[in-house]
Length: 262
Image (cartoon, rainbow, N blue to C red):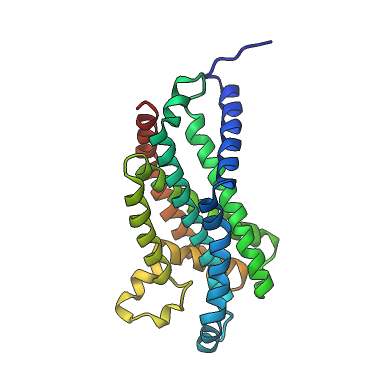
């Protein structure tokens, strides 16, 4: 039997897959993560369609689902990232990260596995929201390639937000993480073009609403599913996402390393 160094590329792949499986199993057994990923977004979508969907359709003449389905998919990606960040904080406090650090495990596999697991979680959550949306009348009208890009937008956006959450989680207490990020995601949702049309907002705040991260992601997904501009909002959504990754990836890696060595 050939023994490989813990720093070899093969070890990185093997250890990342093992830790990814561990995270997915742990999240699946955690009620909070399941609720934030699957149940809460689907219930939110149904509530929005029942309460304000008809009013928005009367106001604009368009089906409100083409704004609410993208918005809820993005909100689900962000909310699940918060729950995952709380679990990361618990693993840090329990000393689990430190135990992994002293084992013959590739150092990069910890963060790599979290990125892959987050991507899997977001895909599952987005598919659940789309399925509920289909039951309510949502459809893809731009073909299969556009539908695939539609599903990819929440993944990229969610991974960027997860990078921010990871950076915060390894430095901050769990209560502060939940409170601050929940307030942030709520403001982004209520002041987005997925919640109500842009023209429904006061004129002075429309530029902020139109260009904030969640709005551009929702507008891009609306165009990919039904109709509307795609190039501008998709470009802005990617810029917001990759900008967050560039700014917070290094602090997240440094914080994760520090938390693992405590």
